[in-house]
Length: 276
Image (cartoon, rainbow, N blue to C red):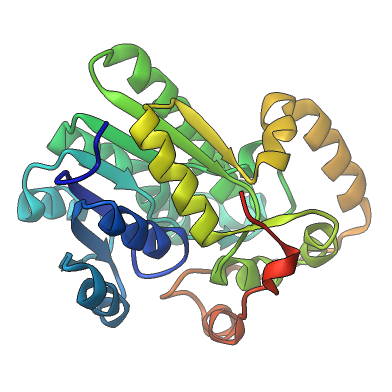
């Protein structure tokens, strides 16, 4: 695929991987439409890329279809928008927070695919389904569903390029939020972390080469291909983690402590990041 001149919609483009990918695809000549809840951050990206800006909250049912109608036909859809919801499974149940999380992380990507029917789809899932951790059940379940749907979409649509991006730890504001979950910082500090810019470069390369899946950083391919090993290891690490009944909503419009952690976040020194 030649990205130059292609019309690309990127959701969740206000920060992290989505923001870095907008810059990378624009550098390669793509014509961008970018969407997220934080319009000020989107306009900063648009000023440097020429993208059209679409302020949306994809955690609300029906918004994805309206976004598709607003943007119109695209060559590439990048379903990158997502946010975590940290809470015990038995406490969260199926309440409104849980349903909004699944709308954002699972249903909205499928709604955009259905409404746009683009020649190329990029679904950003997560390593979370194969590396479960206390309080991450809702998020991991939604991303597991999106991963399965991505595989089935590829089977059902042989004429469509379907790329799954499976990020492990990436040095974005999300990491500040994840560290609010008990015990997570000690685990994250054991393993390598990649940069958003390097991840964006890998995604763009994978699109041009028409790849089916990438795991980033590459170190985590082992966990992706042998999920039982990761689950056993994390089950052992989590044995002394204490949890409470507190529900933590993350993302740019999350709870105050999550937003404060995002504002305080600073990237790791480049020497500590995994570049590819």
